[in-house]
Length: 244
Length: 244
Image 1: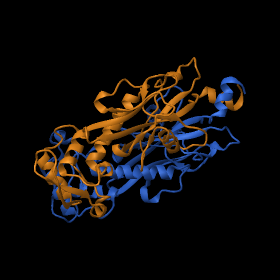
Image 2 (image 1 turned 45 degrees about the vertical axis):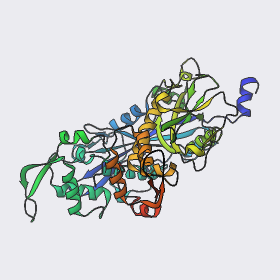
Image 3 (image 1 turned 45 degrees about the horizontal axis):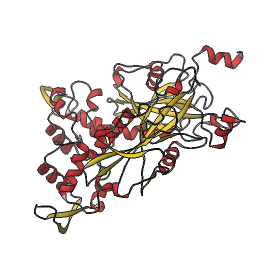
Image 4 (image 1 turned 30 degrees about the horizontal axis):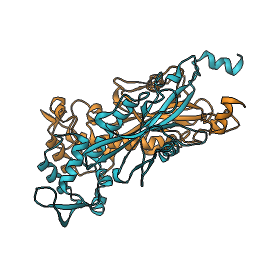
């Protein structure tokens, strides 16, 4: 306790951290109209056998993003998975491993977010005791503060749907306006807009093109199939825009 | 190197981190029509005597937010400073202290963002070798990756202006539509919208109320003073909305 060390102790000592990444991966099962979240069952303490967001701790020399992609590559196979940083949770006492009688190290979580196409996403069950797409309204008590992280991710997803064309990244290439409305309803909840306003608004934005092809489902009259026209959208890309 | 330790070494070892917070604090000098950023001159290595965003390292038991507010309280006096988390920068080699021959510890930065009222903000020059409001177009080379963090914060600010009523938190209580347009132009740049469209759009949103009072400045004819009507805005608060 002399010299440099003493000086550090006299001012407030810095915290030591391990850094984790946790991924909030959403998907929409358009057949069942359900918003799903990818959960894995933890296989180690703390919270062994408890459902959690797929996450891992950052290894030496690894970037945060690389850690997030690494753990996902072990859990899910999907094309074009694009992770976006969500939020960093780093308060004291968010991880039981922080107990002063253990290692005196804090655990910080940088969360990431993605929306993937349900039909193309394949879960990998190797070396796990549990992996599942959980419907958003059936989420159990999760490990750590993962319910809070998930809640934050859900709000971001809703926000993105309102302000960006993210829906068209995960819908099938051809869709009816009813499909699109159902997709929005699944994520934003009933009553976010009535169908007729929604339809008018989206068509007015000018980047949905009618393919001329009709589809018949159930008892209703045939509906037109649309596709997202990326070229028509391009000039709008950097403009503030509301989708619903 | 036996038992538990050995197992850890055989799999990839985890990285150790110190965690910093860095604040991107914006203000608008409406007199000069300039967007300003708060910078402080670093007083220690690395990057001693280099301009940087005001930041600090997280101390034991301290939350990320508390650390961010702690360092700001030493640099600036302002009412109602509300920090919003921006982004976490945590890649390897972002801090020269990470050199393997020093301590083998990574430095991660959680950045925060705020827009403060220029007239009310008072810089604190105690115990600093430099502190300044820098115009956004005159930012020097900053310490670490702070130019990149600032760039990210600037985009967030522009985004918030487009999608939220943040302007009214920092404008004077009474303003002309010309003042408001000038404020937007200062942050979004010339040509984000022509004045006439801007005026029509903002008035149509329904939460600017004409106080009936006129003001005369320079040679133009007197302009009406408006105020932001928080009550009229309340029902729109959670609706997706574009301001410009």
